[in-house]
Image (tube, rainbow, N blue to C red; front, side, top):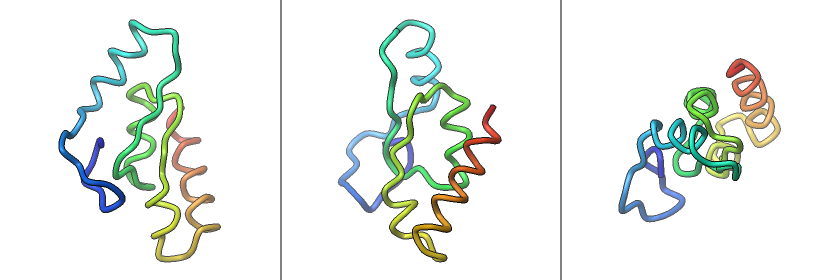
Length: 80
């Protein structure tokens, strides 16, 4: 997990530099998971994640799932 999450038990917390290192050394796309929110999704993408897993950010969004998807799309579009 990159951030605290209630979706799963977190025994280790990854730092975003692991995404940058991955992009510099690997060809296989990477997925970031763990506590990613609308507020942190762009930073995770900029750090090097090819994909972000955001189940909690979608299902627990205060304005509903559709609003969450719109907000995450907007956030990720600002990453580049």
